[in-house]
Length: 487
Image (cartoon, rainbow, N blue to C red; front, top):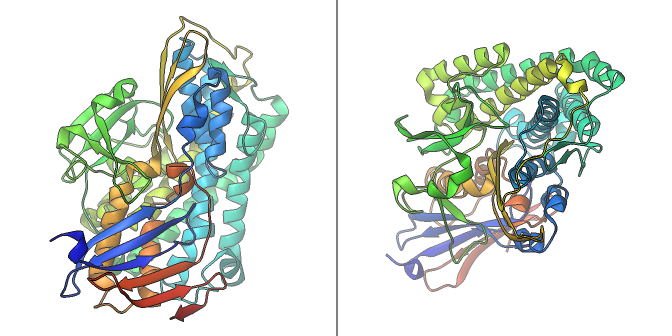
């Protein structure tokens, strides 16, 4: 069956995600769902902006990809530039960067869960739209909202003290960092870290309680199976800053393990589609983009690592894996639970780093033999982030390739939408409930469409139904005021 013979429902644009996209669901002549597509409809082409710039500018330039996870791009680029200058980081430089990174994980996970996702989970997917936001959360669950805001604020403060600013800092430079922590800065962060750990534990317990209360719904909502990929430490431990690449099939069978990310192109291919500006990465060992797609991010990381190297988070990992005979691991909503486990791990890691005297060291920079190619890979809040650069003899970037976290999850998000459409779409009738459920499924991935296509936008939600001849036969709109309108 060709696309031309299918009817079409489009959701344009999505709301409460970072960036601007639309959803199209293709129906056959019997109004059965055949395909789902997440369209990324804007383009900024950041790789081209970087070409021609001196390599030492890149870690600061690429932060402008995103206002939510600039630290992730900053550090991935800095790791690539470490290769360019041939440097092996000093202990102080690596630990300051790790502190910066885990501060970013903490604030980003808190932002997504408390500001964006928890209103869906606490009020219900079909609750009044005006209620499903941080203001509604603060009104009905003030303590949860307050702690969420304070966790994010703490993560931002870690970033400020290590990177110089909360957003678009300059802490990491090729071969090291430009500052360590003073005694006063360390004491200020230590004062609150135990409360942050406690509140992070409460957040994990909250998601677990939601799964226990709505077990069948959470287990089956937008469910699909897929291979997964992430970085792991040489020991197999979760490591969000560095390590080797590990990938496994949906049944847990290994695809590759501890692979050198500096040659990622031998493992990961990239495809494009005419209907989206976002690339479609795939694992070459599985074939092409149609057969080799996979997922990344908190759910992949918690499931693939052998253990989490902080005790409280590892205890929660074991509970997550054992829950309902492991069913939460394959659930799209399992992303929320895994994300909170990682938030707890980030808080514990920050505490350990703050007690390490290396973070006050004075050896900040290292040098080595100059190279032409640099590859930096990091586990960003949303998943594996790859930065790859080539630099000429004049120190100018001549090629850049970025595979950001949301891009890795591109097809996985399409599969989640397809699963929701199969569950909740009845004929051609567009309902507000359908829109809500599709958004909840996409939001579980915490997508950053700004990073993936380097676009920025925020708009209301529109749905259209097209007949097989291309004629619009139904249209629904949720405007910027949250009103559901049918035309």
